[in-house]
Image (cartoon, rainbow, N blue to C red; front, side, top):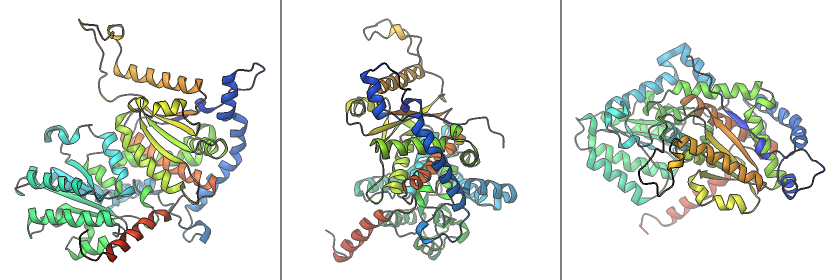
Length: 491
């Protein structure tokens, strides 16, 4: 499968201090205190390369020592393994099964609900928002090219939100003999014990059974993605779902690292995305990580500069500034990845997602003149998918835009990026640019794998295990105790 050269790049010039000179300026002094020096960055290289070697060794461990557990490093080689398996086994491979089951949902339904929380849905949601039409669910079927409308639930216990989606399904899907009035369900939970998703599954399963009746259609249109063993797997088998239609979540892949398993690949295939291109992008980034020197290695650069700024310069607010509305869900996916991986033992950066230029009119003031506790990583898409919208001339020029009549929306965005970065530099606010050539499956595969790898590198640099999320278990345990103590009586 041939793909164009779509390598993503990470530019760190906006957070490197200029070489010291005899000429003193207040700005130079500020930048010296808040920007990295090249000498300090070079001093990190031996440690960074050592960590890369450690991660290479960890992915081969079948029985890791206690101090490394949990060790969910299976995501690192997963993209290439899935591609190799697909080349050998085609439709019998895991990717082949994903494509086949996605084809079933695409052919037989007009709506698909994805149930999951955290890593069980955030990756799929990021792919949907980034790569599908911005108003995908509003388009007529022909314009969606066979892709069903997509909805995401089971990520909260919001009674009204769940009720509204159930009401939508009940009122729009009435005759199950009509494909345009059928809906399907993807339920994702590794353990099957997460209460938000489990409760949602019970509710949506009941609605499916009400619509489809006692026949086999429910079993055909409900696709579970889960671990083995798991409560969800046992429940689905007990309800008559074919075990061959239950897709696996590998034991050695944690939820927030699972986007390139059936957790993310099945919804992506239902959306009509090219899952092989996603995997090729991810595999290409893994290859760059292990083979490229620091100067060409976005994984190592991202981990090193952000780690230094957090640990040694007090920049522990990590802003992902996305310069496209379509990438907001990528930012939210990264929020979970960073927070759950590194927020441990009283340490770890705090992630913040900002959508530019929208949030320049809210958070922008804090970024520009607030506390000096932030590093801003701009996520920029170089080329748009659609024809550039030109401002154009108007008979009435009270808005004074005729002077820019030949400019386009991409021109405005480029000027906004440059102007904002210049303002940050002049205020000694460190920034870096993560540039995607365009929004495609291949570039998103690279981006998500890069951020996962960089998070693992940063965890090892900190001495924090980037796998596992012990803090998340506390609320689950307390929540179940409270529910059990209250019995079956409603509040």
